[in-house]
Length: 163
Image 1 (cartoon, rainbow, N blue to C red):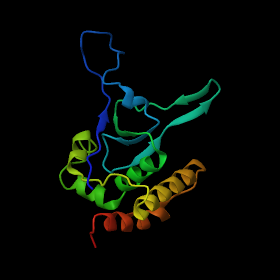
Image 2 (tube, rainbow, N blue to C red; image 1 turned 120 degrees about the vertical axis):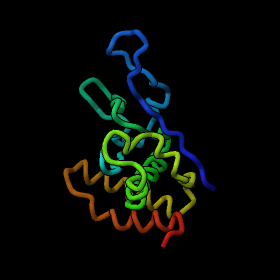
Image 3 (tube, rainbow, N blue to C red; image 1 turned 120 degrees about the horizontal axis):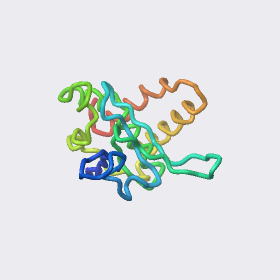
Image 4 (tube, rainbow, N blue to C red; image 1 turned 30 degrees about the vertical axis):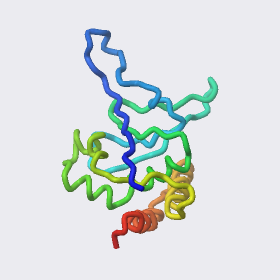
């Protein structure tokens, strides 16, 4: 089953209120997990964010106004989406119609992706989630995670029956 994920977009909007006011903040901004990417870039580079421990307790990480995100409440689903977005096929697809810079990672580019709805019983979905989570854990430790790229690319091609 194909499913269109709703993409959230935070940005400032002038409504005659103080310049520091934030608009388009909603419950999606505070979802348990957010798959976030830069809107102004030359390459798709997504990451899963959630919360972090601070001296003041656990705090939710909030995306900046130059990012877009998918909001989900399941960690495996977040990592599944993140792996797909970081695949070569998605990056090449977006580059085929969206130039680097301001519009590269705009939320509207996600309207052109038919990402299958996450299914925890699907082995490909779960393997993508596992690879993304492992890559995130390596990066947290300051280690490179490039060796996951080929396997993720192969699995995303299988996901869409592209050989």
